[in-house]
Image (cartoon, rainbow, N blue to C red; front, side, top):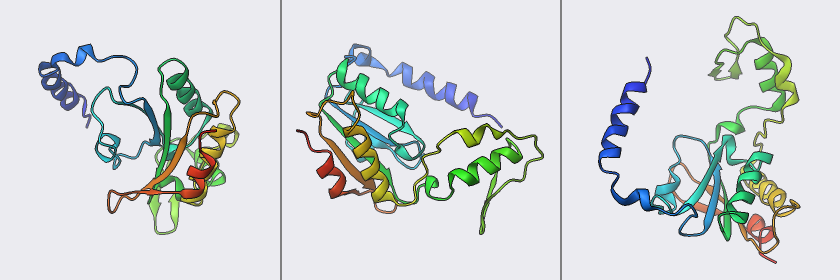
Amino acid sequence: MSVLNEILEANKGYAKEFGDKANLAIPPARRFAILTCMDARLDPAKYAGLSEGDAHVIRNAGGRASDDAIRSLVISYKLLGTKEWFVIHHTNCGMEFFSNDLMSNLLASSLETAELGAAGFKDVGQGPGSNEGKYINWLTIPDQASSVLEDVTRIKSHALVPASIPVYGYIYDVSTGSLIEVPEATKVGQAR
């Protein structure tokens, strides 16, 4: 069953109360960006105290510093004036539960949704699959703190990222709602 009608009805109510949001500036008012996970349990507006127009929020699976995420951060800075960036991963992330090899093998079997059981993910589809998954680095997360450090390091060392931008590293705890600093990442991410 589709949620299309629910979404369209909710949008009617939102649009009715839209008010002066049409006057929000394109650059984020608070001049920062967050790179975080697409996990539905995370609400950056709530955990970071944001209102519409305050910040850029870039989301992908795991909140990883992929080429596209860095592209978005560079645009955020170069064209829209952000001055600080946050990398925020989270506990109990789905990206911790598989590897590149497992994802490639699942996709090779079928393109249907896999099931997660006590022994991990398994393919239940009938196929056909595709071997194209083996050409992608899925940026899985073997360890949260190490992954935050890796992403902050990748961002800070990118040729298009100015040394003057601080990049902070945090882990959002899905059981408490707290942001926990990864001090090593924040140290690497210091502005120079």
